Length: 174
Ligand code: AMP
Image (cartoon, rainbow, N blue to C red; front, side, top):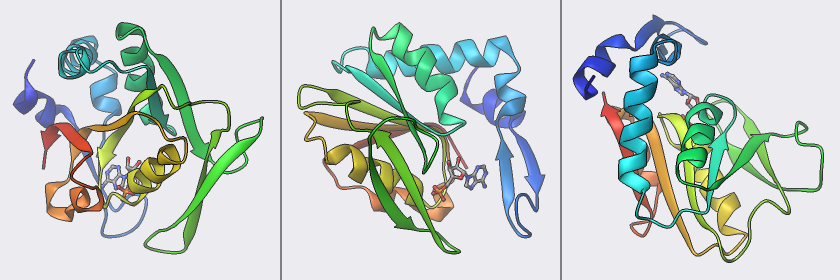
């Protein structure tokens, strides 16, 4: 397996969830053990020397590899979820979407000042969701924040949302 092969295995679904959107469906990748293994190894090699203590996964497709990587890096896993899903006291942030607003939450006791955090999601599109997640994590005054995606839609320039001091990596690019 390599990045080019993985790219070919991602399913393109036109007009989902709205007309004009070409949805990159990673379930066709997650269903294959060889793809899971390749992604898992690539992520491990990228972050094994970064001293990561917590992996924050973005609901819901971000949970899959975030949890896997947490185990491999001897780190903890922390979910970021849409408002109303997490049971205990939360911090939250509201951000602008293409149509309307959205609020994401994280448990108040999930991170602390000693944490080195990797925030992971499956795909970088406009970057609005990840930028909000970064701002949410910043509220905990953690030591350092890294950001990772499996796939990035380069043409949407989502990277421009992040400061230079945040390292952003993606395994495949469109
Ligand atoms: P963003 O525009 O970067 O804030 O994307 C919001 C969320 O929707 C992310 O979690 C992405 O996984 C997902 N998403 C947005 N656009 C696409 C797309 N074209 N294909 C697959 N997932 C997408």
